[in-house]
Length: 298
Image (cartoon, rainbow, N blue to C red; front, side):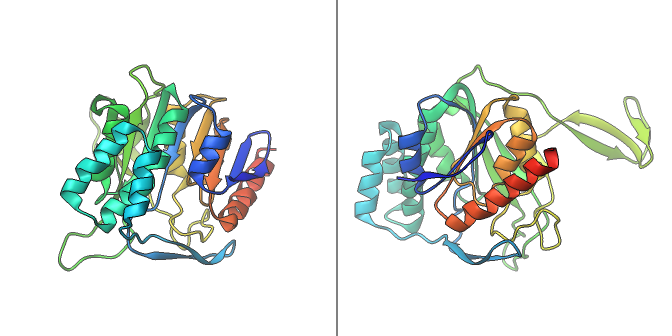
């Protein structure tokens, strides 16, 4: 069922199936902010290659299984089940529908545990955002979709038969119209001075309200924060989300916490956290990072 694997005064990490953990340990409407970064339906197998962890970690490959699909329908809210049945008409009995069905029970539980003033950020492959957005529309209501955020980066390969794929989608939904949100700003550089622009040692700039296109460097081999855990997201990305959609002392949940970046960002900004991951190795990496972050605070 997923027992607590690591606990501090800041929060708890559970190792196990996230649906089982959510049902057993997380009460209704108890979480202020959720960041979920599930598998992407990439078709790849991922391996850890860093100093902190090494070896195979997870396979992001999905096959159609009618029995698994039926279980997902039974374990999901009725509105989400209807969305899956609609997707079935379009996608057929495919690996993509198998992927959507696999995520459905967890998404239903995330909706249950989110406070009325809370927000969900679902990080996904840009090629899957249309399916997942339909599912979240069914859960939250179409009007509760606040943004489809584009996280743009420069890493990865280039395609010969298509434009280079250099962004992820982050779907931002709220549980109600009365939600926590603190507008963020980004620094934009200019070559020339004009009204409203300031100057520092690097030239002219203005701090403007943040757009829904975020250019934050991805974690690469030479990044200081790199753990080697596959699909690790940059701390700056999670700090931005946590700062925008929560307050000090709030509870931040990551049901696919991996190497613990969300939890580190939450702790750094004075939020409590809950992490869940099926991998014992991921929990070890997250635990080490959180312990190091706490030591640095002291």
